[in-house]
Structure formats: C-alpha cells, structure tokens
Amino acid sequence: MRWQDWQERSIPVDEMEKAAEKPAGWSAVKVWLRQWNQPRTQQLARTGLLALQVLSWQERGRRMLGTWNTAIQRLRLTYKLAYYIIPSPLARTRNQRAITRPVAPRARIICNPTSGSGRGSNALRDLEETALWLTEHGLPAEVCQTEHAGHAAELAREAVQKGMDMVVAAGGDGTVSEVMQALVGHSTTLGVLPLGTVNVWARETGIPLHLDQAREVLVNGVRRRIDVGRANDRYFLLMAGIGFDAEVARRVQDSALTQMGLKIVDYITTTGWLAITHQPARVTIRYDQGKRRSFNALMIIIGNTRLYGGAMTFAKHAIADDGLLDVVTMENGKLIYRLGVLLRGFFRRAKLGPKARTTQCRTVRIESTPPLPVQVDGDVIGNLPMTFSVVPGALSVIVPHDTPEDIFQRPYVRG
Image (tube, one colour):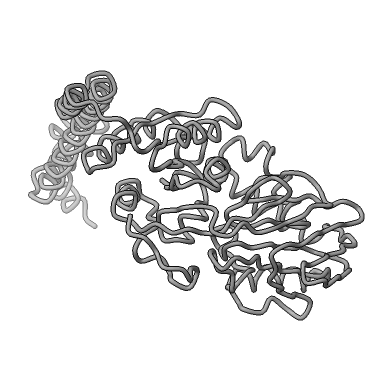
C-alpha cells in the first residue's frame, strides 16, 4: 500500500487523541446503549419488571391468606367455646318444657364414656339430645354415665326395679353384655345405641351405626324374645370362645395398644402371631345327648348368634331364638390349615374345613389339659373346665323391622 493511501484511510490525529481521552470501556457502553434502544430489549425489561410485580402481589396475597386463616381459627375457637358454654335457644326451650311438664322416665340410657367412639363430652351431649328426642317421641328417657367396672349392670338392675320399659346400652359390645346381665328373665327391653369399636350385635341385627338413625329403632323397632347363653353363672348374648380366640382376647384386653385406642390393630397383629405360635390342648366335650368327644383343639366357638368379631361367621346356622346353642369345634392343624379356617370364617363359608364340626345342644361341659382361657362376648371370664347352657327366650330386645329373618324363627311384637 502506498503511503498516500494509508494517510487517506487512517484516523485523523485529533480523533485519535479524543479517543485516547475516553475510558477503556466506552465502546462497550456504546454497544449496550445501542442494544437498549432496540424494541426487543425494552420488551424483555418490561416483562421482567412485570414478573417482579406479580411476585410482589403473590407475596401480599399469601400474607393476607395467612391473616384470614388465623382469624377463622380464632372465630372457630370462639364458636366452640360458645357452643359448649352457652345453651342454644332450642335446648333452653326443651329444658323449659321438661321443667314445666315433668315426666317419669320409661327408658334409661347407660353410657360408657371410655367405649370406642363414645369417649368424651361430645358423645354425652349427643346422648342428652337423644334422650330429649326420645321424650318428645313418646319414650321419656334419662342418661346415666358409668363410673367404674360393673356400674352398668348396677344401673340396669336399678332400672328394672323401678319398672322401666327399656334400658339402652350406649357403647360397645362390652357395655351391651354388662347391661344385659341385669335384664335376663325380666320384661325390660334391651336397646342399643352403637358407640363402640366393632358393635357386633348392631351389625348382626341391622341397627344403624349412626346415632340419629339408631335412635329411630328405639321408637319404631320391633321387640323379640331371644335366647341367651350361660357360661357357669355369666350370661352371653353373642357367643363364647375357647382356645385360640380366647387367648387373642386375653392378650388384647390389657395391651398398651388397646389403651391407646388401637384395639383393631392389636387384634389383627396378635391373631397373626398366634396363628403361627399357638399350642393346642387336649379337650374333652360332653354333650347333653350323652355324646363324648376328645381331641386336640385349635378353637371352640359356642354361638347363640352368627356374626363373630363383626366380620367373620363360624356358627353359620345359629338362630337366636331356637332354644339351642351351636357348638363349633376346630381341631388343631398346621399353619395353612389355621389360616384356611380364618379365611373361611371371614368369607362366611358354610364349611370351615375337614377338621371342623358343628353340633347343636342345650348343655355342654368342656374340660382341657392344660386349662384353656374362655371369653364371652369379647370378655375373658376364666379358664376351663366350664359348663355352657342356653336359657330360652330369656331376654327382650328391640331391633329394626328389616332385621334378617333367618336369625329368628319366632314372631315379633311391635315396639
């Protein structure tokens, strides 16, 4: 290139001096300024600012929602306090009617405060409302709360002595069993409000498990005279169990899980463990027909009714008012056989297996070596030897109209 050409293309000296005076990053700034003036860059900037504003609004919304939740919780607490402390106008009206028109109670509701879902003051308040409802529907009622073991039987016996028409067991099957001890042989009718964990009698007879529906049965149900079983001097409504199931009941009865309200979990766990480890005993049975039988027993069920544990059936053909007990004997076997017996009972099969037999009788004497535990209606009452018998038509009960007819054979009396 010629010198003249280089001079024409080169930057003037004054411009070079001006460029030398500018900062080193000035060219980068000029490039950034040119890019900022482009529409795309400004649009991205506006979008970023809008996103920041949306995030700010979202944070404000979360704060407002938290404030509302706190206010609602305080209002709920205030409402609950008012609900339990201040009686409603309806309750005051009912109480005023009860005061102005006193009526002698014809029914006594016996409540076990530690039974299943019947725990706490909520259930007691509901039962008080139920007593008012029964009174308004022609069955004046009162509520009594148990305070110790055996108190339910004492309250029921007192109701019989006062000539009350009905005693209502509000609780589980244990409460029902304790109440019925005082009603056997009397005309006072047994009613049930199922507040327990399993509620076998309610499920057997079709009594609704909701309080608002179960109380309808006490007014509109039908009355029947049914049999009860007797183990020595203890009556049972549902069944007696010997061996495997009684050992399960014994372990579950006082376990820590049961005290924590996890009885079902403990029952399933214990049943599974004993299905593997349970040891049989030599049992001798003497029936009233003169029959005698000895065998290694897994379990013996003496059924007055059919349903066992709320889910299984062993005494498939038991009838509650036929004057007979169904004695189901299951011999010992390996683990597969034991599990098969439980599964057949769960699916309510008529045949429990080749080693199971059912015999109907009025009285049976059972002995074992070593002595096996005995449970009636879920309560362990002692060990063998023991005599079991039936007391025909000894108890009056009230049940729904649509109770399955195949568990009764006698006509009913309208409640």
